[in-house]
Image (cartoon, rainbow, N blue to C red):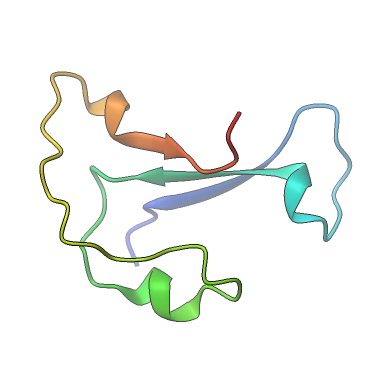
Length: 69
């Protein structure tokens, strides 16, 4: 509900339905820990855990690229 997940087309790729053509970026700094993303994820790629130690000095380090790029 707060734009914590961004989906971007990878550079040089054309818009398609192939999940590998996109970058999936989760900004933990914007996350509300509501679990909505986990509920609606059609591929069960997201899972809420008890891990909570996410302290960093730079907010940009809270962005996780799930595409592996």
